[in-house]
Amino acid sequence: AIAKKKGTEILEIIGWEVTIRKDFFIIMKFIKNLNFNHVYLVTNGNKMSDYEFSKKFYDLDVIDSIVFSIHGSTPEIHNRVTNTPKSFEKLLEWISNWKKLWFDAKKIGTNTAIEQGNYQDLPEIAKLIKKLWCLWSSEFIFADPNQWWVNNEFDSLMPYISKAAPYMRQALEWGNNN
Image (cartoon, rainbow, N blue to C red; front, top):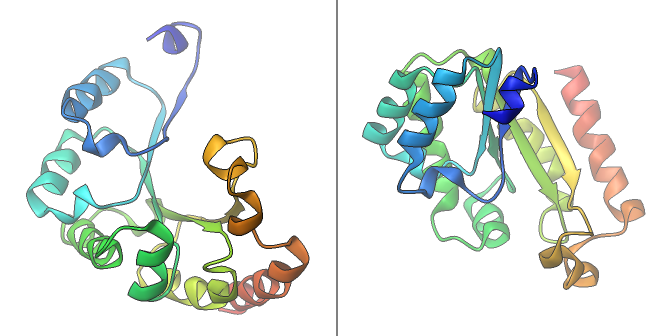
């Protein structure tokens, strides 16, 4: 509310996973009443795999765009990186739910955290993103080394940029040509 009073027009809902909060819908109604010009949500999609949850959220008409995290082109890679069984399957379910709700594909984006467990899979992730109907934007990002969970495991989590760069180039080249 303070940010809105100071003139903020864009709100990004990001960090950990807001959809698992018990007061998620209360927070979303509060945000809606603030009348931001643009609101977008970054989510892992696990809760959105429940059609009723997705519909309730969609019907609130709070967000203008949504970004989901995709960390592998296969269940094996994605689930290993997220350390969450069936997270890949749930991701596919929530995208299916949002298609059924006719959410504009031009408002769905992705982010992919580049790490040791998936950097060689980046070209295939890029192909999957297009196949999944996500047209707004896609980010391929390295984790912030200042975050405690990254800093404590940096050497085992993060590939050298020089090792990841060829796969990043392949993903970008494929994206530019398709």
